[in-house]
Length: 192
Image 1 (cartoon, one colour):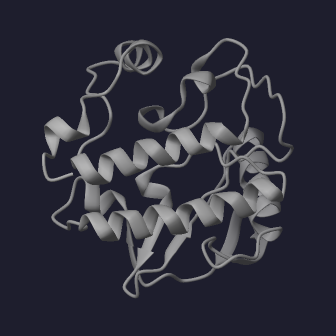
Image 2 (image 1 turned 45 degrees about the horizontal axis):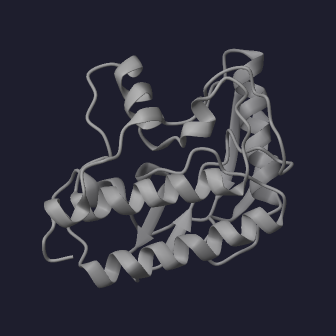
C-alpha cells in the first residue's frame, strides 16, 4: 500500500502494532510488516473465504444456526482482544471473514484503540452504518460495549440481509443511530 500522508502511515502502523499482539483462532494473524521504498506492507494470514458483507448484500445466505455460530466465534474473538486492552472500533461485515470451513476471522485493526477506557478522539472514525451511539457523541467515550453494539448491528444485518438503518445522508444516519430503534427483526423475519 502506498501511503501518501503521515496520518495514513500512523494508522497503518497502529494496525500492525495491534495485530502483532493478537494470537487467537478468531483473529487474523499478522506475520510481518515493513516498507519497501514508498510502499508499506503487512503480511497477514490468508483466509480462504469471503467477508460477511457477502452474506448481507451478496447472493450468499446464512441459516439462523450459522449466524448464531458466526456471532459466537466473533464474540470469542472480541473477548480476547478486549482482554488485550484493545477496542476494535470498526467492526462491520466487511471486516469479518468467514472461511470455507466455517471459521470466523476478525480483521482490520487500523483504527483500533489500544488502551481500554475513556477515549476522546476528536473526530468520528469507523464505518458509520455499524457505529454505536457513543462513538458518534461529542465526548466519544468508548468502552468494550462499543464493539458489542457493532457486533449486534452485524448480527442484525446478517439476519435481516440489510443494515439497521437506511439513510440518504450521513446526518440522517447519525440521527437514526442516536434516536431511533431499528425495524423489529420479528417483523422482518417471522421465522425468527
